[in-house]
Image (tube, rainbow, N blue to C red; front, side):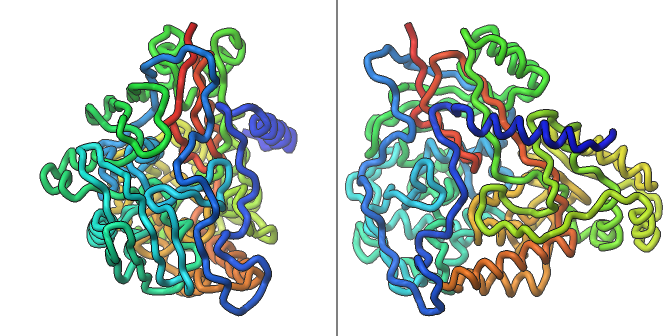
Amino acid sequence: MKKTSKLIAVLLAFVLMLTLAASCGNDEPGTDPAPSTSPATSSASPPAPASSPAAPVAEVPAVPAPTGVNLAEHIDMIVDSIALTLVNPLIPSAFGTAASWCYVLVHDRLITRRPGSPSDFDPALAIEWHTDDFQTWTFKLRDDVYYHNGDHFTAHDVVWSIQKGASEGVGTPMNERWTKVENVTAISDYVVEITLFDTNIEFVRNICTPICGILNQRAITEDPEKGYWVGTNAWKVTDFSSMNYIKFERFDDYWGEAPLTKTQTWTTVPEASTRAIMLQNGEADLALSISRGDLDLFTADPNNFTVFPVTANQPRDLQFNQDNPIAADLNFRLAVAHAIDIAEIALFANGNLAVPITDGVVWGYETTWRNPNITPYPLDLDKAKEYLAASIYNGENVEIMVSAEYDARAAEAIMQMLSRIGVNIVINQLDVASFNANTTWANNTAQLCIWTKWLTSLHNQYRDSFYPGGYMNRSRFDNQEFNETITAAMTMFDDNQRQAAYYRLQEIAHENVADIPLYYLVSAFVGVNGVGGCFLPASNLHDFRYMYKVIE
């Protein structure tokens, strides 16, 4: 495996080409600006009160369907994984990429991000919101919303959902969001007041995530297993088979714009080659995560298939469980950092569908305030051996836990590279649900693992990744300076001050080798010609509610 600058140039050029390509009808979001609740100018004084923007009350599709054509009533989609308990946001193993897509279909949030914009917000269950101090927030709710079981949505559902999310599901995104709430009160049936423990200028941004959907108390109380299927969004779950399939039916009493398709079925097909064969044989309308080896089959057949490339904003990282003595040893982590070749790992992992991270920063590539001053650890085997000799490592097997196929290939490359300095690596590949269950803050059995960091927003997701208790903190990183800095950052109204804080946070993570960023993944989705309407942002939280298929 020989590193070349030509390879990096080719990969970057390929990704630029993909970014500019049509992506299932959407434009890739640009650079994530400062949160809209921040002051427009740098000032140490508190900003003006934050209120809901002028926006349509009724939600509209991100990608409208063409007019004057015939559309299919059913769409079959095949995915590489569906978490075991997919639609229960209070179980750590139920969080993952496909699970988030499911939550988008089934559950509404109070507010959503505006399609195509990572910093603007639109009404959803809440039609207005306001705060004077960024600690107490008032939300005015819709009065025409019904759950899939016929229950009328009110402020009491919001109160119950927040309280349940804060009290249960430790290690889940929902718990992480709602534990910031000190008190939530139904002022009336359609007005709710939320008071936070601390000032947080990014609170609105943080609760836009699909995991913050509002649940139905009666449904969950009466059926603790299937009650989590009941939401208020455009699709209802009609059948679900663990790690096999999930079936959706259009919810005709949905308050927003109705989907044009009546039913969807998502089927789990773990093998990439099988997904490609099924698509070619007409057994699916859309296949996700087509492998690098199969992609040419579809790009060479534009009369029958359309390729939708999406460059994820989130880095794939090598993460160290610092509860493990070997992984907790900084000298061991530095030895690993100096012994691996990032560009070669990216190439080995997914070829032209992976972009190496060459600056050493654990940060979203489109996310604002990426620190340009961090110098990556250079490939230096002599230095790596020196650090290893100073560590507690004594020839033991060290496990890298992975789930996705491309991460398994990355782990194989790392195994070969670390063998050159005398580190013995074993690879443990699990399904998504098992991987998530074994890498939570509360139950982390991995020594090292490879997974993604959801860093599309500034504060909460970086906190989730490196703050004690964070659901993405698979490294169990706990650093006093980091904790104090990120806690202070959410109360800073001065943009320059906040930028300096986020720069320092990236430096702390790098200095401590909390994670080693490896690559950005370029997902290749392939559909039969006529499929459209899906919204595929770089955040990877794709929206398939308004997917359609044009038929003859």
